[in-house]
Length: 584
Image 1 (cartoon, one colour):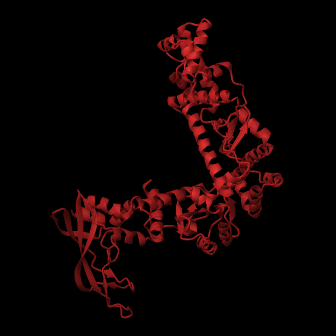
Image 2: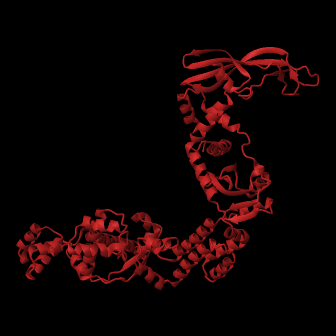
Protein backbone atom coordinates (compact mmCIF):
# COMPACT_ATOMS: atom_id res chain seq x y z
CA UNK A 1 0.00 0.00 0.00
CA UNK A 2 2.90 2.33 0.72
CA UNK A 3 4.01 1.94 -2.93
CA UNK A 4 0.53 2.93 -4.04
CA UNK A 5 0.84 6.17 -2.04
CA UNK A 6 4.28 6.81 -3.59
CA UNK A 7 2.57 6.79 -7.03
CA UNK A 8 0.52 9.74 -5.83
CA UNK A 9 3.68 11.60 -4.71
CA UNK A 10 7.15 10.36 -3.72
CA UNK A 11 7.25 12.61 -0.64
CA UNK A 12 4.23 11.02 1.02
CA UNK A 13 3.98 7.87 3.11
CA UNK A 14 1.15 5.71 4.41
CA UNK A 15 0.30 5.92 8.10
CA UNK A 16 -2.60 3.47 8.07
CA UNK A 17 -5.60 2.41 5.98
CA UNK A 18 -8.98 0.78 6.58
CA UNK A 19 -11.99 -0.36 4.54
CA UNK A 20 -15.33 0.99 5.67
CA UNK A 21 -18.51 -0.02 3.79
CA UNK A 22 -17.90 0.99 0.15
CA UNK A 23 -14.89 3.22 0.83
CA UNK A 24 -11.14 2.70 1.30
CA UNK A 25 -9.69 5.29 3.69
CA UNK A 26 -5.96 6.07 3.59
CA UNK A 27 -4.30 8.13 6.29
CA UNK A 28 -1.14 9.69 4.76
CA UNK A 29 1.41 12.35 5.62
CA UNK A 30 4.36 14.14 4.05
CA UNK A 31 7.88 12.97 4.86
CA UNK A 32 9.35 16.46 4.36
CA UNK A 33 10.72 18.10 7.51
CA UNK A 34 11.16 21.55 6.06
CA UNK A 35 8.40 23.49 4.23
CA UNK A 36 8.49 26.70 2.20
CA UNK A 37 6.29 29.69 3.05
CA UNK A 38 4.11 30.42 -0.02
CA UNK A 39 4.03 34.15 0.85
CA UNK A 40 7.72 35.00 1.27
CA UNK A 41 9.57 31.85 0.14
CA UNK A 42 11.52 31.33 3.37
CA UNK A 43 12.03 27.84 4.84
CA UNK A 44 10.46 26.73 8.11
CA UNK A 45 10.69 23.65 10.37
CA UNK A 46 8.56 24.98 13.24
CA UNK A 47 5.18 23.29 13.50
CA UNK A 48 2.28 25.32 14.85
CA UNK A 49 -0.37 22.54 14.74
CA UNK A 50 -1.58 19.56 12.67
CA UNK A 51 -5.06 19.00 11.21
CA UNK A 52 -6.51 16.52 8.70
CA UNK A 53 -7.82 17.30 5.22
CA UNK A 54 -10.30 14.87 3.65
CA UNK A 55 -9.59 14.58 -0.09
CA UNK A 56 -11.38 12.26 -2.54
CA UNK A 57 -9.23 10.34 -5.07
CA UNK A 58 -9.88 7.99 -8.00
CA UNK A 59 -11.78 4.81 -6.94
CA UNK A 60 -10.16 1.38 -6.51
CA UNK A 61 -11.98 -1.90 -7.15
CA UNK A 62 -15.36 -0.14 -7.30
CA UNK A 63 -14.71 1.45 -3.91
CA UNK A 64 -14.49 5.14 -3.16
CA UNK A 65 -11.03 6.32 -2.06
CA UNK A 66 -10.73 8.89 0.74
CA UNK A 67 -7.35 10.41 1.62
CA UNK A 68 -7.02 11.70 5.18
CA UNK A 69 -3.98 13.91 4.77
CA UNK A 70 -2.12 15.13 7.87
CA UNK A 71 -1.64 18.82 7.13
CA UNK A 72 0.80 20.89 9.16
CA UNK A 73 0.33 24.54 10.03
CA UNK A 74 3.82 26.11 10.22
CA UNK A 75 5.33 29.23 11.80
CA UNK A 76 7.04 31.67 9.44
CA UNK A 77 10.07 33.19 11.24
CA UNK A 78 10.75 35.80 8.54
CA UNK A 79 10.13 39.16 10.24
CA UNK A 80 9.38 40.82 6.89
CA UNK A 81 6.60 38.34 6.01
CA UNK A 82 3.08 39.62 6.56
CA UNK A 83 1.87 36.16 7.64
CA UNK A 84 2.99 34.55 10.90
CA UNK A 85 1.70 31.11 9.97
CA UNK A 86 0.99 29.20 6.76
CA UNK A 87 -0.62 25.86 5.88
CA UNK A 88 1.16 23.00 4.15
CA UNK A 89 0.41 22.77 0.40
CA UNK A 90 -0.10 19.30 -1.13
CA UNK A 91 1.06 18.98 -4.75
CA UNK A 92 -1.71 16.57 -5.76
CA UNK A 93 -4.60 18.84 -4.69
CA UNK A 94 -5.31 22.55 -4.90
CA UNK A 95 -5.65 24.55 -1.63
CA UNK A 96 -9.04 23.93 0.02
CA UNK A 97 -9.89 21.39 -2.72
CA UNK A 98 -11.94 18.32 -1.80
CA UNK A 99 -10.70 16.27 -4.76
CA UNK A 100 -7.26 15.40 -6.14
CA UNK A 101 -6.24 17.01 -9.44
CA UNK A 102 -6.37 13.68 -11.30
CA UNK A 103 -9.89 13.03 -10.02
CA UNK A 104 -10.96 16.56 -10.97
CA UNK A 105 -9.55 16.00 -14.47
CA UNK A 106 -11.52 12.74 -14.76
CA UNK A 107 -14.72 14.51 -13.67
CA UNK A 108 -14.20 17.35 -16.16
CA UNK A 109 -13.51 14.90 -18.98
CA UNK A 110 -16.76 13.05 -18.22
CA UNK A 111 -18.76 16.28 -17.98
CA UNK A 112 -17.60 17.47 -21.42
CA UNK A 113 -19.43 14.51 -22.96
CA UNK A 114 -22.62 14.88 -20.87
CA UNK A 115 -24.67 17.45 -19.04
CA UNK A 116 -23.51 18.15 -15.48
CA UNK A 117 -26.60 16.40 -14.12
CA UNK A 118 -26.06 13.25 -16.18
CA UNK A 119 -22.32 13.31 -15.48
CA UNK A 120 -23.06 13.41 -11.74
CA UNK A 121 -25.28 10.32 -12.07
CA UNK A 122 -22.69 8.45 -14.15
CA UNK A 123 -19.87 9.24 -11.71
CA UNK A 124 -22.04 8.16 -8.79
CA UNK A 125 -22.24 4.71 -10.40
CA UNK A 126 -18.42 4.67 -10.39
CA UNK A 127 -18.34 5.56 -6.65
CA UNK A 128 -17.22 9.14 -7.27
CA UNK A 129 -19.14 11.74 -5.29
CA UNK A 130 -19.62 14.88 -7.40
CA UNK A 131 -22.89 16.84 -7.45
CA UNK A 132 -24.03 18.98 -10.39
CA UNK A 133 -22.95 22.24 -8.70
CA UNK A 134 -19.47 20.87 -7.92
CA UNK A 135 -18.98 19.86 -11.55
CA UNK A 136 -20.08 23.31 -12.77
CA UNK A 137 -17.67 24.93 -10.29
CA UNK A 138 -14.79 22.78 -11.54
CA UNK A 139 -15.54 23.78 -15.14
CA UNK A 140 -15.74 27.48 -14.33
CA UNK A 141 -12.29 27.38 -12.68
CA UNK A 142 -10.86 26.69 -16.14
CA UNK A 143 -7.14 27.61 -16.37
CA UNK A 144 -5.56 29.14 -19.46
CA UNK A 145 -5.23 26.04 -21.65
CA UNK A 146 -4.27 27.79 -24.90
CA UNK A 147 -0.89 29.40 -25.60
CA UNK A 148 -2.09 32.50 -27.46
CA UNK A 149 1.39 33.47 -28.61
CA UNK A 150 1.74 30.23 -30.61
CA UNK A 151 -1.43 30.83 -32.67
CA UNK A 152 -0.64 32.15 -36.17
CA UNK A 153 -3.49 30.99 -38.47
CA UNK A 154 -7.12 31.13 -37.45
CA UNK A 155 -10.65 31.01 -38.87
CA UNK A 156 -13.66 32.64 -37.21
CA UNK A 157 -17.42 32.20 -37.43
CA UNK A 158 -20.50 33.10 -35.40
CA UNK A 159 -22.90 30.75 -33.59
CA UNK A 160 -26.26 31.22 -31.90
CA UNK A 161 -26.41 31.44 -28.13
CA UNK A 162 -30.14 32.02 -28.47
CA UNK A 163 -31.36 31.90 -32.05
CA UNK A 164 -32.50 35.27 -33.43
CA UNK A 165 -31.66 36.98 -30.13
CA UNK A 166 -27.99 36.61 -29.15
CA UNK A 167 -24.89 35.29 -30.90
CA UNK A 168 -21.28 34.51 -30.06
CA UNK A 169 -18.10 34.03 -32.06
CA UNK A 170 -15.76 31.03 -32.21
CA UNK A 171 -12.08 31.03 -33.21
CA UNK A 172 -10.38 27.88 -34.52
CA UNK A 173 -6.65 27.29 -34.96
CA UNK A 174 -6.02 26.21 -38.57
CA UNK A 175 -2.80 24.47 -37.51
CA UNK A 176 -4.03 22.29 -34.64
CA UNK A 177 -7.71 22.17 -35.78
CA UNK A 178 -8.75 23.11 -32.22
CA UNK A 179 -11.32 25.63 -31.04
CA UNK A 180 -9.13 28.03 -29.05
CA UNK A 181 -11.48 30.77 -27.89
CA UNK A 182 -15.09 31.94 -27.71
CA UNK A 183 -16.61 35.35 -27.02
CA UNK A 184 -20.29 36.04 -26.18
CA UNK A 185 -20.79 38.62 -28.92
CA UNK A 186 -20.49 39.26 -32.64
CA UNK A 187 -20.68 43.05 -32.37
CA UNK A 188 -17.99 44.96 -34.25
CA UNK A 189 -16.64 46.67 -31.12
CA UNK A 190 -16.20 43.40 -29.22
CA UNK A 191 -14.90 41.43 -32.19
CA UNK A 192 -12.33 44.16 -32.98
CA UNK A 193 -10.67 43.88 -29.52
CA UNK A 194 -10.63 40.08 -29.51
CA UNK A 195 -7.85 39.24 -32.04
CA UNK A 196 -5.51 41.69 -30.27
CA UNK A 197 -5.10 39.05 -27.51
CA UNK A 198 -3.37 36.83 -30.09
CA UNK A 199 -0.19 38.79 -30.95
CA UNK A 200 1.21 36.59 -33.75
CA UNK A 201 -1.77 36.08 -36.08
CA UNK A 202 -0.68 35.90 -39.71
CA UNK A 203 -3.78 34.48 -41.48
CA UNK A 204 -7.49 35.04 -40.80
CA UNK A 205 -10.02 32.97 -42.75
CA UNK A 206 -13.58 34.27 -42.47
CA UNK A 207 -16.90 34.65 -44.26
CA UNK A 208 -17.93 37.90 -45.93
CA UNK A 209 -19.41 39.54 -42.81
CA UNK A 210 -18.19 43.12 -42.32
CA UNK A 211 -17.89 42.45 -38.56
CA UNK A 212 -14.96 40.07 -38.95
CA UNK A 213 -13.44 42.16 -41.71
CA UNK A 214 -13.00 45.09 -39.32
CA UNK A 215 -12.03 42.78 -36.43
CA UNK A 216 -8.98 41.57 -38.38
CA UNK A 217 -7.75 45.18 -38.73
CA UNK A 218 -5.91 44.82 -35.39
CA UNK A 219 -3.37 42.78 -37.40
CA UNK A 220 -2.85 44.92 -40.53
CA UNK A 221 -0.11 42.63 -41.90
CA UNK A 222 -2.25 39.49 -41.58
CA UNK A 223 -3.67 37.86 -44.71
CA UNK A 224 -7.49 37.95 -44.74
CA UNK A 225 -9.01 35.17 -46.87
CA UNK A 226 -12.74 35.09 -47.61
CA UNK A 227 -14.29 31.62 -47.56
CA UNK A 228 -15.07 30.24 -51.03
CA UNK A 229 -18.08 28.22 -49.92
CA UNK A 230 -19.90 31.28 -48.61
CA UNK A 231 -19.24 33.12 -51.88
CA UNK A 232 -20.67 30.31 -54.04
CA UNK A 233 -23.59 29.94 -51.62
CA UNK A 234 -24.28 33.70 -51.73
CA UNK A 235 -24.38 33.70 -55.54
CA UNK A 236 -26.65 30.64 -55.62
CA UNK A 237 -29.04 32.25 -53.14
CA UNK A 238 -29.13 35.49 -55.17
CA UNK A 239 -30.10 33.66 -58.37
CA UNK A 240 -32.52 31.46 -56.43
CA UNK A 241 -34.31 34.58 -55.11
CA UNK A 242 -34.51 35.98 -58.64
CA UNK A 243 -36.07 32.77 -60.01
CA UNK A 244 -38.62 32.66 -57.18
CA UNK A 245 -39.49 36.34 -57.73
CA UNK A 246 -39.81 36.22 -61.52
CA UNK A 247 -41.02 32.72 -62.40
CA UNK A 248 -44.39 31.08 -61.70
CA UNK A 249 -44.53 28.04 -59.43
CA UNK A 250 -45.17 25.82 -62.46
CA UNK A 251 -44.13 26.53 -66.02
CA UNK A 252 -46.26 24.93 -68.73
CA UNK A 253 -44.93 23.48 -71.99
CA UNK A 254 -46.37 21.38 -74.81
CA UNK A 255 -45.46 17.72 -74.81
CA UNK A 256 -41.78 17.15 -75.53
CA UNK A 257 -42.45 13.59 -76.84
CA UNK A 258 -45.33 12.09 -78.85
CA UNK A 259 -47.52 9.51 -77.09
CA UNK A 260 -46.98 6.06 -78.60
CA UNK A 261 -49.78 3.73 -79.70
CA UNK A 262 -48.96 1.24 -76.96
CA UNK A 263 -49.28 3.95 -74.34
CA UNK A 264 -52.65 5.11 -75.67
CA UNK A 265 -53.92 1.54 -75.66
CA UNK A 266 -52.81 1.07 -72.11
CA UNK A 267 -54.20 4.42 -70.96
CA UNK A 268 -57.62 3.79 -72.53
CA UNK A 269 -58.11 0.53 -70.58
CA UNK A 270 -58.18 2.15 -67.16
CA UNK A 271 -61.91 1.73 -66.42
CA UNK A 272 -63.82 -1.54 -66.50
CA UNK A 273 -66.23 -0.67 -69.38
CA UNK A 274 -63.29 0.35 -71.56
CA UNK A 275 -61.43 -2.84 -70.71
CA UNK A 276 -64.48 -4.94 -71.68
CA UNK A 277 -64.86 -3.15 -75.02
CA UNK A 278 -61.12 -3.47 -75.63
CA UNK A 279 -61.34 -7.24 -75.01
CA UNK A 280 -64.27 -7.61 -77.44
CA UNK A 281 -62.46 -5.54 -80.09
CA UNK A 282 -59.29 -7.62 -79.85
CA UNK A 283 -61.29 -10.85 -79.91
CA UNK A 284 -62.88 -9.76 -83.21
CA UNK A 285 -59.40 -9.10 -84.56
CA UNK A 286 -58.61 -12.75 -83.93
CA UNK A 287 -56.46 -12.52 -80.79
CA UNK A 288 -56.51 -15.42 -78.35
CA UNK A 289 -57.70 -15.00 -74.75
CA UNK A 290 -54.11 -15.30 -73.49
CA UNK A 291 -52.96 -12.54 -75.85
CA UNK A 292 -55.77 -10.20 -74.73
CA UNK A 293 -54.92 -10.96 -71.09
CA UNK A 294 -51.33 -9.99 -71.78
CA UNK A 295 -52.39 -6.65 -73.29
CA UNK A 296 -54.79 -5.93 -70.44
CA UNK A 297 -52.34 -7.13 -67.75
CA UNK A 298 -55.08 -9.40 -66.43
CA UNK A 299 -55.48 -13.12 -65.97
CA UNK A 300 -57.25 -15.21 -68.70
CA UNK A 301 -60.18 -15.90 -66.36
CA UNK A 302 -60.91 -12.15 -66.13
CA UNK A 303 -60.79 -11.82 -69.94
CA UNK A 304 -63.24 -14.71 -70.33
CA UNK A 305 -65.65 -12.90 -67.99
CA UNK A 306 -65.30 -9.78 -70.13
CA UNK A 307 -66.03 -11.72 -73.32
CA UNK A 308 -69.05 -13.43 -71.73
CA UNK A 309 -70.79 -10.04 -71.38
CA UNK A 310 -72.91 -9.22 -74.46
CA UNK A 311 -71.88 -6.00 -76.18
CA UNK A 312 -75.32 -4.42 -75.72
CA UNK A 313 -75.06 -5.04 -71.93
CA UNK A 314 -71.64 -3.44 -71.42
CA UNK A 315 -72.16 -0.67 -68.80
CA UNK A 316 -71.54 2.94 -69.74
CA UNK A 317 -68.27 4.57 -68.69
CA UNK A 318 -68.47 6.39 -65.39
CA UNK A 319 -66.36 9.38 -64.52
CA UNK A 320 -63.55 8.60 -62.13
CA UNK A 321 -64.05 9.51 -58.48
CA UNK A 322 -61.43 12.22 -58.74
CA UNK A 323 -63.22 13.75 -61.72
CA UNK A 324 -66.58 13.70 -59.90
CA UNK A 325 -65.01 15.42 -56.90
CA UNK A 326 -63.49 18.04 -59.17
CA UNK A 327 -66.83 18.74 -60.86
CA UNK A 328 -68.57 18.97 -57.48
CA UNK A 329 -65.92 21.37 -56.16
CA UNK A 330 -66.30 23.62 -59.22
CA UNK A 331 -70.10 23.68 -58.78
CA UNK A 332 -69.77 24.63 -55.11
CA UNK A 333 -67.25 27.36 -55.92
CA UNK A 334 -69.55 28.73 -58.68
CA UNK A 335 -72.45 28.86 -56.19
CA UNK A 336 -70.29 30.77 -53.71
CA UNK A 337 -69.20 33.22 -56.40
CA UNK A 338 -72.85 33.77 -57.43
CA UNK A 339 -73.86 34.31 -53.81
CA UNK A 340 -71.05 36.87 -53.28
CA UNK A 341 -72.15 38.78 -56.39
CA UNK A 342 -75.80 38.80 -55.23
CA UNK A 343 -74.76 40.22 -51.85
CA UNK A 344 -72.68 42.90 -53.55
CA UNK A 345 -75.59 43.81 -55.84
CA UNK A 346 -77.89 43.97 -52.79
CA UNK A 347 -75.69 46.75 -51.40
CA UNK A 348 -73.75 44.97 -48.69
CA UNK A 349 -70.36 46.63 -48.06
CA UNK A 350 -67.17 44.85 -49.11
CA UNK A 351 -66.01 44.65 -45.49
CA UNK A 352 -69.14 42.73 -44.41
CA UNK A 353 -69.40 40.10 -47.17
CA UNK A 354 -66.26 38.10 -46.10
CA UNK A 355 -67.61 37.80 -42.55
CA UNK A 356 -71.03 36.69 -43.79
CA UNK A 357 -69.57 34.03 -46.11
CA UNK A 358 -66.67 33.01 -43.83
CA UNK A 359 -64.05 33.73 -46.49
CA UNK A 360 -61.04 36.02 -46.67
CA UNK A 361 -61.26 39.45 -48.32
CA UNK A 362 -58.96 38.24 -51.10
CA UNK A 363 -61.29 35.34 -51.97
CA UNK A 364 -64.34 37.63 -52.11
CA UNK A 365 -62.43 40.07 -54.33
CA UNK A 366 -61.68 37.19 -56.71
CA UNK A 367 -65.36 36.15 -56.74
CA UNK A 368 -66.45 39.71 -57.57
CA UNK A 369 -63.93 40.07 -60.39
CA UNK A 370 -65.86 40.01 -63.72
CA UNK A 371 -63.14 37.87 -65.33
CA UNK A 372 -63.16 35.26 -62.55
CA UNK A 373 -63.54 31.61 -63.62
CA UNK A 374 -63.96 28.61 -61.36
CA UNK A 375 -62.06 26.38 -63.80
CA UNK A 376 -58.71 25.30 -62.39
CA UNK A 377 -56.17 25.58 -65.18
CA UNK A 378 -53.76 23.31 -63.31
CA UNK A 379 -56.28 20.49 -62.79
CA UNK A 380 -55.08 17.22 -64.27
CA UNK A 381 -51.81 18.86 -65.34
CA UNK A 382 -48.77 16.67 -65.53
CA UNK A 383 -46.13 17.42 -62.88
CA UNK A 384 -42.97 15.33 -63.27
CA UNK A 385 -41.92 13.34 -60.26
CA UNK A 386 -39.11 10.93 -59.41
CA UNK A 387 -40.19 8.65 -62.26
CA UNK A 388 -40.11 11.40 -64.91
CA UNK A 389 -36.70 10.37 -66.38
CA UNK A 390 -37.85 6.72 -66.54
CA UNK A 391 -41.36 7.02 -67.97
CA UNK A 392 -40.54 5.07 -71.13
CA UNK A 393 -38.87 2.36 -69.05
CA UNK A 394 -42.19 1.87 -67.19
CA UNK A 395 -44.94 2.42 -69.76
CA UNK A 396 -43.59 0.60 -72.80
CA UNK A 397 -42.47 -2.58 -70.96
CA UNK A 398 -45.79 -2.62 -69.09
CA UNK A 399 -47.70 -2.53 -72.41
CA UNK A 400 -45.77 -5.65 -73.48
CA UNK A 401 -46.69 -7.63 -70.37
CA UNK A 402 -43.89 -7.65 -67.70
CA UNK A 403 -45.15 -7.33 -64.14
CA UNK A 404 -44.50 -4.33 -61.90
CA UNK A 405 -41.90 -6.17 -59.75
CA UNK A 406 -39.98 -7.14 -62.90
CA UNK A 407 -40.03 -3.51 -64.16
CA UNK A 408 -39.05 -2.30 -60.67
CA UNK A 409 -36.02 -4.61 -60.65
CA UNK A 410 -34.84 -3.21 -64.02
CA UNK A 411 -35.28 0.39 -62.83
CA UNK A 412 -33.42 -0.26 -59.57
CA UNK A 413 -30.41 -1.38 -61.59
CA UNK A 414 -30.51 2.03 -63.30
CA UNK A 415 -30.59 3.93 -59.99
CA UNK A 416 -34.33 4.19 -59.18
CA UNK A 417 -34.96 4.29 -55.41
CA UNK A 418 -38.78 4.21 -55.25
CA UNK A 419 -41.10 1.30 -54.45
CA UNK A 420 -43.20 -1.04 -56.59
CA UNK A 421 -46.32 0.66 -55.24
CA UNK A 422 -45.08 3.95 -56.72
CA UNK A 423 -45.00 2.34 -60.19
CA UNK A 424 -48.58 1.12 -59.82
CA UNK A 425 -49.75 4.54 -58.63
CA UNK A 426 -47.92 6.26 -61.48
CA UNK A 427 -49.54 4.04 -64.11
CA UNK A 428 -53.01 4.44 -62.59
CA UNK A 429 -52.70 8.24 -62.60
CA UNK A 430 -51.45 8.23 -66.18
CA UNK A 431 -54.38 6.06 -67.31
CA UNK A 432 -56.93 8.26 -65.53
CA UNK A 433 -55.43 11.53 -66.73
CA UNK A 434 -55.10 10.48 -70.35
CA UNK A 435 -58.64 9.11 -70.41
CA UNK A 436 -60.10 12.31 -68.97
CA UNK A 437 -58.18 14.48 -71.40
CA UNK A 438 -59.24 12.40 -74.39
CA UNK A 439 -62.86 12.60 -73.23
CA UNK A 440 -62.66 16.40 -72.96
CA UNK A 441 -60.55 16.69 -76.13
CA UNK A 442 -58.04 18.96 -74.43
CA UNK A 443 -54.36 19.39 -75.30
CA UNK A 444 -52.01 17.57 -72.98
CA UNK A 445 -49.50 20.02 -71.48
CA UNK A 446 -46.69 19.18 -69.08
CA UNK A 447 -45.21 21.32 -66.37
CA UNK A 448 -41.78 22.07 -64.95
CA UNK A 449 -41.77 23.00 -61.30
CA UNK A 450 -39.97 26.19 -60.35
CA UNK A 451 -38.07 24.35 -57.63
CA UNK A 452 -36.54 22.13 -60.33
CA UNK A 453 -35.08 25.22 -62.00
CA UNK A 454 -33.75 26.34 -58.61
CA UNK A 455 -32.12 22.94 -58.05
CA UNK A 456 -30.26 23.27 -61.36
CA UNK A 457 -28.33 26.20 -59.85
CA UNK A 458 -26.26 23.82 -57.74
CA UNK A 459 -26.98 20.40 -59.25
CA UNK A 460 -26.29 18.74 -62.58
CA UNK A 461 -29.23 18.02 -64.87
CA UNK A 462 -28.86 14.25 -64.44
CA UNK A 463 -29.11 14.66 -60.64
CA UNK A 464 -32.50 16.46 -60.75
CA UNK A 465 -35.12 13.72 -61.09
CA UNK A 466 -38.11 16.05 -61.71
CA UNK A 467 -36.95 17.46 -65.05
CA UNK A 468 -35.86 15.75 -68.29
CA UNK A 469 -33.33 16.97 -70.84
CA UNK A 470 -36.13 17.81 -73.28
CA UNK A 471 -37.94 19.91 -70.68
CA UNK A 472 -34.67 21.60 -69.77
CA UNK A 473 -34.10 22.62 -73.39
CA UNK A 474 -37.68 23.92 -73.61
CA UNK A 475 -37.11 26.02 -70.47
CA UNK A 476 -33.88 27.53 -71.83
CA UNK A 477 -35.60 28.25 -75.16
CA UNK A 478 -38.44 30.05 -73.40
CA UNK A 479 -36.17 31.86 -70.89
CA UNK A 480 -32.71 32.42 -72.48
CA UNK A 481 -31.52 34.35 -69.41
CA UNK A 482 -31.61 31.12 -67.39
CA UNK A 483 -28.83 29.66 -69.52
CA UNK A 484 -26.64 32.71 -68.87
CA UNK A 485 -27.27 32.54 -65.11
CA UNK A 486 -26.47 28.82 -64.92
CA UNK A 487 -23.27 29.44 -66.89
CA UNK A 488 -22.37 32.30 -64.54
CA UNK A 489 -22.66 30.01 -61.51
CA UNK A 490 -20.46 27.35 -63.13
CA UNK A 491 -17.84 29.96 -64.08
CA UNK A 492 -17.78 31.36 -60.54
CA UNK A 493 -17.27 27.87 -59.11
CA UNK A 494 -14.36 27.10 -61.44
CA UNK A 495 -12.62 30.45 -60.87
CA UNK A 496 -12.84 30.02 -57.06
CA UNK A 497 -10.54 27.00 -57.38
CA UNK A 498 -8.45 28.25 -60.30
CA UNK A 499 -5.76 30.06 -58.21
CA UNK A 500 -6.09 32.90 -60.75
CA UNK A 501 -7.66 35.94 -59.05
CA UNK A 502 -7.54 38.01 -62.25
CA UNK A 503 -10.44 35.90 -63.60
CA UNK A 504 -12.66 37.40 -60.89
CA UNK A 505 -12.50 40.85 -62.50
CA UNK A 506 -13.69 39.40 -65.83
CA UNK A 507 -16.55 37.57 -64.10
CA UNK A 508 -17.63 40.74 -62.27
CA UNK A 509 -17.82 42.69 -65.53
CA UNK A 510 -19.99 40.00 -67.14
CA UNK A 511 -22.27 39.83 -64.07
CA UNK A 512 -22.82 43.62 -64.13
CA UNK A 513 -24.47 43.32 -67.55
CA UNK A 514 -27.50 41.55 -66.07
CA UNK A 515 -30.18 43.90 -64.77
CA UNK A 516 -31.03 41.68 -61.79
CA UNK A 517 -31.17 43.48 -58.39
CA UNK A 518 -30.24 40.35 -56.41
CA UNK A 519 -27.18 39.70 -58.57
CA UNK A 520 -26.11 43.36 -58.51
CA UNK A 521 -26.31 43.37 -54.71
CA UNK A 522 -24.08 40.30 -54.58
CA UNK A 523 -21.53 41.95 -56.93
CA UNK A 524 -21.47 45.08 -54.75
CA UNK A 525 -20.66 42.91 -51.73
CA UNK A 526 -17.76 41.33 -53.64
CA UNK A 527 -16.34 44.75 -54.56
CA UNK A 528 -16.40 45.86 -50.90
CA UNK A 529 -14.28 42.85 -49.86
CA UNK A 530 -12.36 42.30 -53.10
CA UNK A 531 -8.90 41.82 -51.61
CA UNK A 532 -10.00 39.14 -49.13
CA UNK A 533 -11.92 37.32 -51.87
CA UNK A 534 -8.89 37.28 -54.15
CA UNK A 535 -6.82 35.95 -51.23
CA UNK A 536 -9.44 33.21 -50.86
CA UNK A 537 -8.82 32.26 -54.50
CA UNK A 538 -5.01 32.35 -54.15
CA UNK A 539 -4.73 30.44 -50.86
CA UNK A 540 -6.32 27.14 -49.84
CA UNK A 541 -7.62 28.37 -46.46
CA UNK A 542 -11.33 27.92 -45.75
CA UNK A 543 -13.86 28.19 -42.95
CA UNK A 544 -14.71 24.50 -42.81
CA UNK A 545 -13.10 24.03 -39.40
CA UNK A 546 -15.10 26.93 -37.96
CA UNK A 547 -18.35 25.48 -39.36
CA UNK A 548 -17.48 22.12 -37.80
CA UNK A 549 -16.70 23.85 -34.50
CA UNK A 550 -20.14 25.49 -34.55
CA UNK A 551 -21.70 22.02 -34.99
CA UNK A 552 -19.76 20.80 -31.92
CA UNK A 553 -21.02 23.79 -29.93
CA UNK A 554 -24.60 23.01 -30.96
CA UNK A 555 -24.20 19.39 -29.79
CA UNK A 556 -22.77 20.49 -26.43
CA UNK A 557 -25.63 22.99 -26.01
CA UNK A 558 -28.18 20.25 -26.69
CA UNK A 559 -26.43 17.93 -24.23
CA UNK A 560 -26.80 20.69 -21.63
CA UNK A 561 -30.48 21.12 -22.64
CA UNK A 562 -29.71 24.77 -23.49
CA UNK A 563 -29.51 25.67 -19.77
CA UNK A 564 -26.02 27.04 -19.51
CA UNK A 565 -24.16 30.28 -18.93
CA UNK A 566 -21.64 31.39 -21.52
CA UNK A 567 -18.70 30.74 -19.16
CA UNK A 568 -19.84 27.16 -18.64
CA UNK A 569 -20.36 26.62 -22.37
CA UNK A 570 -16.91 28.02 -23.15
CA UNK A 571 -15.28 25.78 -20.53
CA UNK A 572 -17.00 22.67 -21.89
CA UNK A 573 -16.04 23.46 -25.49
CA UNK A 574 -12.39 24.23 -24.74
CA UNK A 575 -11.95 21.28 -22.38
CA UNK A 576 -13.57 19.02 -24.99
CA UNK A 577 -10.98 20.16 -27.53
CA UNK A 578 -8.12 19.67 -25.03
CA UNK A 579 -9.16 16.15 -24.07
CA UNK A 580 -9.74 15.22 -27.72
CA UNK A 581 -6.07 16.00 -28.40
CA UNK A 582 -4.82 14.26 -25.22
CA UNK A 583 -6.81 11.04 -25.61
CA UNK A 584 -6.47 10.70 -29.39
